[in-house]
Length: 112
Image (cartoon, rainbow, N blue to C red; front, side, top):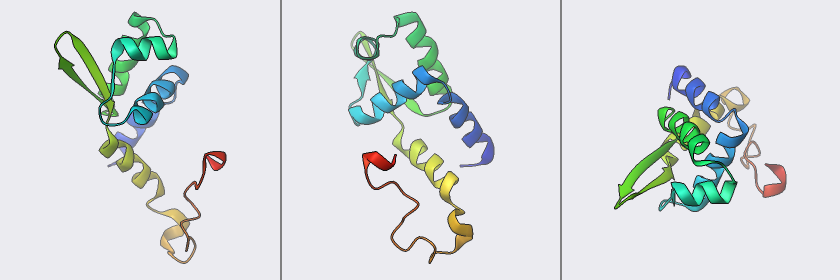
């Protein structure tokens, strides 16, 4: 991932509803969720949800697939992991002894 891609991804999730959508899709796993289920789960109007899904898709953070008359959205885990790698690639200035137990990574929900 390069700096421009990282900025696009960070801009996409720098909005409350989009962050909620993305986190919901990450939690849903590789099967994803139908747009209607997302709308109901997050209490977001369909038209508003569509707007946010477009921004997340543009940032390549989510992917859409159509099955029958439903559109399912899934988190793009490769892009998410690429963003995390980009953000942490120079952790501790490249000194691997700085984080012997990967202390720079969250270990539980309380530290996130």
